[in-house]
Image (cartoon, rainbow, N blue to C red; front, side):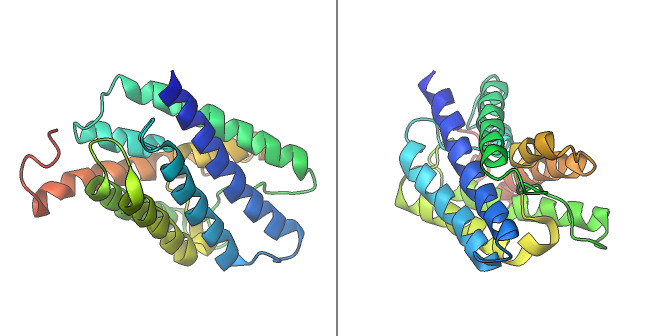
Length: 220
C-alpha cells in the first residue's frame, strides 16, 4: 500500500502547488508571472521524484504509468491502482485550492487559449507528453524515476514545456491534473483532449525508443 500512498501524496503535492500557483497568479493579477508558474511546476515535480522515486517510482500521472506498462517495465494490473491513487491525490489538491481561493474562476483548470483550435491543442498536448515520456523512459530505472538524473531531467522538461506551451494549452500532459480542477469548476468541455492526447503521446514515445535504442530496450 505504501506505493499507492506515495503516488497519492506526490500527486497531491504536484497538483496543489502547480494549480495554486496558477490560481494565486490569477487572483493577484499576475504577481507570480507565467515564468514563475512554470518554475513551480518544474520544481515540485523534481522535489516529489526525490521524495518518492524509490517508493512508487514517482509516476504521478496515469499517462506515465500506461507508458511504463506499454514498455513492459510495469505491470498492467498496477495501472488502475496507480491511476486511482493519482486521481484521489489530484482531487484532494483541487479541493484544497478551491477551499483556500473560493474567488478564483479557474482553479488552475486546463483549457486551450481563446481562439486556438481544439485539434491543434490536442496535437500540442500529444507532442508535449511525447517529449516528456521520451525523457522519462530514458532516465528511469525500470519503472522508477530515481536519483538526481531523473529528478532534474523530468523537472526540467516540465519547466521547459510549461514555459512555451503554458499560455496555449496550460501544458497539462497529465489526465488527472486536468480532471481534478474541472470537478470544481464544472467545465468538462475539453477533458477528452486532456485525457486522450497525453496517453497517446506517452505510448508513442515508448514505441519510438526502439528506433534509437536496442530492440530489447523496452522489454525489461
